[in-house]
Length: 492
Image (tube, rainbow, N blue to C red):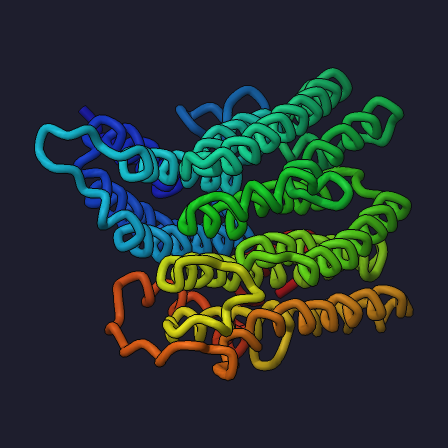
């Protein structure tokens, strides 16, 4: 009998799924199971990376049945970069969760606290969906994986159990359901028009009113899931009221699924046109300005970070529109760089904000400088992440913004440069509110507290924030990885 040897791409999806089931069935061992599953998933992704480096694009038909009848998994440089990003953030957030939930270990015979019992099953289920999105090569499989992500994300959003978290989670669920319905309708229209759902079939599809309507429906659904202005209403409260590890996953990973699918649609089919790209840029501009203004008004640190996500998601859409349809084959790389930079920095920033809140006892921005306790490493991590999100050199965020503005200048679209600069100034302003509180000591009315030593929870945000800055020095290799398999027809 032939031996069964699962492909690394299949394992990248199945390992976190089996880990989620095991963590749910054995909640007391969930942290060990979770970290083991993430480590095994990272090894599978490394094997995928080796294959992609050798072949450029790797395709695996599940069960031996390829498209259009069967389901294919496909990996290229863009998918590989997103897979690696997911593994990195999952490992860092998982280590942070060990410390965040360390005080909740129950005695023998006592029920397992909700956060400790359900975090790892939900986290691993989320990773299953994320990896499935990055490796899917057909629209229906993408829809299924989006629903897996939504199920896990809503659970993570309400894990804190507070009234505010439950209310925000309910709004998130409604938005997710509406977005999923629109995506599903679009998928159905595509099938009726073309008779197939794989990306290879879309590449040869001819434009028609039905196909245009299908892509419009999917665009609105994905914009809702990605929290693009003005469909962002669910994001700030959902991210701000979740636990710190959950907020890091939601902001760094979940909203990227819709952005990634949008990139793949732009690559595969007769979509988007010039008018759609301009509309995306205009909506992105609204997100940059509105998100920045609301971050300036935010009273809590985590709410400020959540509103900054709205602004930075808008900037990614501006990057897609920077040079119109003629420059789309290169604009996607600017968008991909900003996605990577935002994910790493925002995961570190949310973990740092959670650590600050735990140590100080609150996250009210106006009173940060009144505390006699200063979690120095968490504040350092927050500042480093802010450097990348603002776009200061040598951070990866700077490289992404520079690529955006360079393409806009080449196309003569100076208005997108103005939007980028306005967003940068706003980000300096709202992050300065927090950084000023970290550095001031003149309003402290008690002796400064003695240093209490470092904790495991300090390490993940510092590492992630340091990477957000340091990866800018590795922009060349990152771009080389993105070009593997020639997404959008770009020649490396």
